[in-house]
Image (tube, rainbow, N blue to C red; front, side):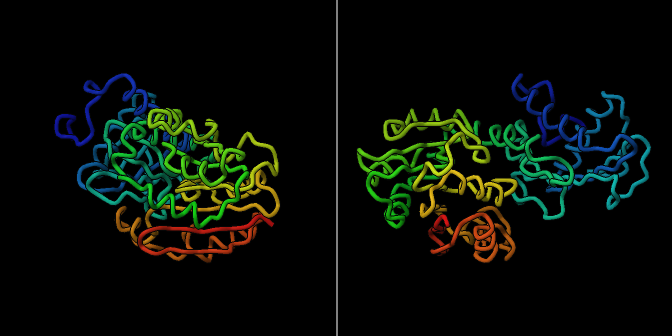
Length: 329
C-alpha cells in the first residue's frame, strides 16, 4: 500500500510531536518481539491493518530487521515461517474510526487509532510486558489530546455527578479524593458535600486534564494533584471517601488499583465507583457486547473488592448511570 492511498498519514505530513508519538509506539512494539524470527498479525477494519503493518515493517527494516508481507496486515520478521498462533507471534488489534474501539480479548496489543496521526497503546498482554513499562505514558498520551474538548464532547453531566455525590452521603468535614478527576466535573459537588471544614483532593495522571479543571474554574474547590492512580502519594488511611468516575476499568490491573485505593482509605471509609452511563449503554457506544467476566460486572467486581479489603454495599447499573459503593473493612 502506498502512503498516498494509506488511511494512516505519511511521515512527511506529521508534525514533530506526531512523529515522536508514532515512533514511540513502534519502538514499544519492537521491544515485544523476540530476538529471532517472528510473525506479526494486525487486525482491524478497512485498510488500517495493511497500512499499519507496512509502517511497522518499514520501521523494523530501518533497524536491521527485514520483513516480508505475505498477506495484508501480516509481517514475517527475519525469515519467520507464517505461524500466527505460535509463541513467536504478536497479534495487534486496531481500534479505528471504521471499526470497534475495544480490542479483541485474545489480542496481545490493542492500539487506538481513532486519530491516525496519534496512535496510543491501550492494552498489552501482561505476559508480554509489565504494566509499569508502558501504561502511564500511553494513558497520558491518550487523555492529553482530549482534555481541551472533553466537556464539550461528553456534554453536561453536572446533574448526574450531583446525584451520585448525593447518593454517596459524604459527611461534612470529610476528606475526599476525586480519583481520576479529569476536568474536575465532580469537584464543585464534592466541595458542597464536605463543606468549608472538609478537604477535597482532585488527582489525575494527566497535566492537561488538570489544566482544563483550572480553565473551567473548578480548581478553587480542591487541591489538585498530578498522580498515578496505582501509586498515590497519600498516607495510609488518610482519606474518608474516594470518588472514582470512570477510572478503575481503565487500569491494566483493576485489583491492584483497588488495593492501592484501600491503602489510603481509613477503615470504615468508602469507595464510590461512578460513570454517567450504564455499562450496557457504554458498551453500545463503543460497539461491543457486555461480558459477564468484565471487571465492572457485579460478580467480578464484588470478588475483587472483597480480595482487596472492601465490602460492596450498593451496585446499581441502569442505562443512565453506573454507581457502586463499597466500605473499607
